[in-house]
Image (cartoon, rainbow, N blue to C red; front, side, top):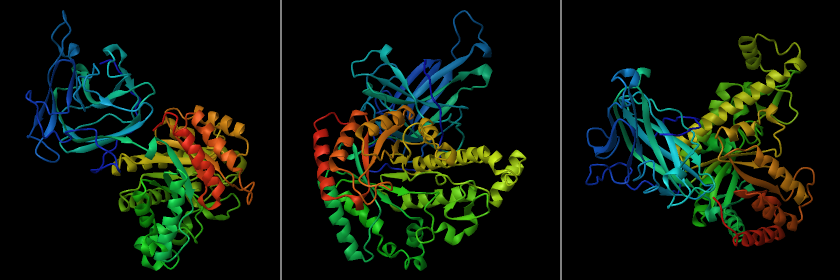
Length: 551
C-alpha cells in the first residue's frame, strides 16, 4: 500500500463514548457477520501475501465476538528465492465495508471537519499502525485516493487488550474516508505472520451546533444561592441563545473544583454546594448549546480562587530576586503538571456532557522573570550543569526553553487524557495572535497546533481595527498547520476598559473571521456585553447562515 503517515501519539485508554456524537461504525463489536464470514460494516485491504478478515468468538473485548485480521502467507516476488529476505506481507482491517483502494463503502465526511477514533486490540503480530485514506467524492476512482495525516504511534499488540485512540482533520475537497489498521513488514526485518484482534471500534465527528462555533467567554455564575443562581443561568443563556451563541466557555477555578469534593472549602465557593457548573450543563443541553471548561493551569492562582498555593505554597514560581509569585505556579515541576492533569480528568469524569477543555493563556505571565525555585535550580544543575542564580541574564534562554518544553509536555499529556476519556471532546487554547512572539514564556501554541495537540486555537485579536483583526488572523492561520482557527474578539479589554467596542465593529469582525475560513468566533466576555452587542452578534450570525457552513 502506497501511503504516507504523519505520526503523533498512541494512547492506551479506558472505554469511552463521545459527547453527543454518533458512532459511524454500524457494527462496532463485530457482532453481526456477513455471508462471507467478515463482520458487517468492516472491510479488508490486501497489499501482499495471505490476508484474511473474519468475525471470531475466540477473542473479544466485549460482547460475543471481535474482528480478526490473520496474516497467514508471505508474498515472494516472482523469480526470487523463497527465503526470508524476500518475504513480505501487507494487510489491514478497514473500519468500513471498503477494500482500502476504491471509494466503494467509504464513510461520508465533511471536508475540513475533525474526526476521532478509538478501538481495542490485541494479537500476535509484532506491530501495526493506523492510516486514513480519503477520496474527493463517492464517484472517485482509485487513483484519486489520498493519505490523510493522523496522530497515532505504531501499535504494539500483545496478549492483553489495549485501546488506541487518535484524531485527524479531513482535508478540504475530501468527501469520503476510511480508517485502516494496517499490518505490514518483511520477515528479514523481524516481522512475523500472526493475528490481530480488534473490537469496540468507534469513529465520531467532532461537531459544533449549527456547524460553526459561536462562543462567548463567561466568568461564572455570580449568585451564591441555588434558586437565584439557576435564574441567573437561565436568563443569561436565553439572551445568548437568542443572539445566536451556541457555545459557552465557562471559567473553571480550581478552588471550585476542589470544593465539589471538599465541604470545608464550600464557604469560599458556595456555588459548589449546589454544583453551579452542573446546572450550567443542564441549562445548556436544553438549549443545544455546548459547554467548554475555560481553565488556566499556570496563572490566576491566588488563594481566593485557586487551591494550588493554598495547599502547596512551595509550588509558587520564583523570580531571580527569590520572590515567590502569589498568583503563578512553577510549571517545571512534574507534580504541578500532574496535579492540573488530575484536576481536569476529574472534571471530565464528573460532567459527561462537557464538550471541551479550553486552556487559558498558557505559560508564565508576560514579562515574568521565572523560574528560579529550588526545583528549577536543582534540575538545571543536574541536567545542564549550570547555576541559574549566578547570572540570570545569561541563563534566561535556558529557562525560556524549559518553559516551552514543559508546557508542551503538559499539552501532549492533556491530549492523551482527553482522547482516553472522551475522544469526541474538543481541546483548545487561547493566547496571542500573529507570529507567535511568546513561546519563551511557555506559550508555544504553534508547536501544539502543528503536533496535533489542539483541535483549534483562539488568538485574542482584540482591536478596534477590522483590517488589523483580519491581518493578524491571517498571520495566525499561517502558523497553525492542520489545527483549526477560531477567532477571539472582545467587547472590552484591558487597554480600553471600561470603554466598549463599537457593536458594528464586532459584527464586521465576525464577517472577517468567516472570510478567513475560521471555524467560528468567541467573544470576550459575557459580563461586558451590552444588548446592542448581542443584537450585532445575532445580525452577523444570521448573515452567515446564508453562506456555506463549516465544522
